[in-house]
Picture 1: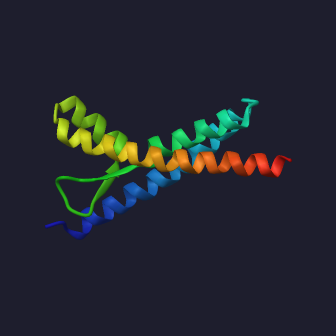
Picture 2: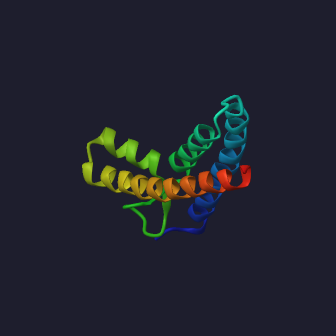
Picture 3: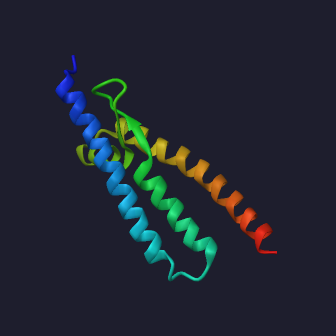
Length: 114
């Protein structure tokens, strides 16, 4: 059974993770401005979003989610291929969705640029 203190710690972790992501993404977006090609710049931003924001459900506690890069890397090091595979499957699904969004953004950019 998960107590209230543990749930509070879980909520605080995700709040801090979200704030840290926003700050990091803002800094990286400023850095990516030096790239002159719009498609490459937005592709790097999309990859950053997929890498850092893809979640995977915990095998230990139901309805708890964690960053897939953290879970997948940890389980890969420990040698649990099935758990690492779940994380990498989530990466694959998130990448496919983000690729579609990226392509639609490029189409929008081309139409607006005309």
